[in-house]
Amino acid sequence: MALQLIDVLQAPELAAGVLQDTIPGCSVDRVFVAHGHIVFNLTFAPLRDLPAYPDERARVVVASSGDVTAFPIGAPRPWLHRSPNLDGTTFGAKYAGLCLFYPLDRRELTWQWDDGFEDYVLCVQRHLAFEEYWRRHGEWPVEDAPHGNPPRGQHPILTPFMRKEAARWARLKKL
Image (cartoon, rainbow, N blue to C red; front, side, top):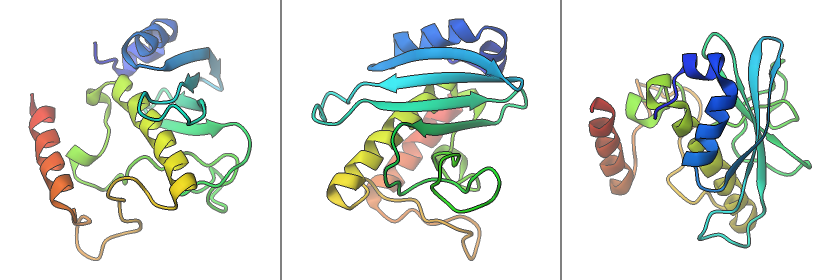
């Protein structure tokens, strides 16, 4: 059921149920409205192949404009991919969202509402597991997205695997 913005805004409790039913290991701890935004507090159990990893907690905020931001919840710890703070100050502090994708990347490498809210939450779950992998092993487990503005157009995709995945996602998103 690809949840759209209107679904989340009009029936957040129903959307919470869909997330719990469709995303393995996802629990919605709380859904509430704050400053006109729908807020989901989520807990993700470790992925099946990573049983020694901790539960991860996140807050996903959905604005009526359609903007969506995910924040990790919990004790302070190092993060590799966080956006600048909402007030524009340093990276990686308390109110900085997770940097899930580069907004200027080609369509198949980013999330948009027509992908469904479930896909966004899956990106959050995967990102939190990748951050824990980075903390344990000192490297990002997949091809890392370049950061900053590319000199010409979009950042190149470097590995054959990611080029193949980008082509596969481009086909899927056209269906």
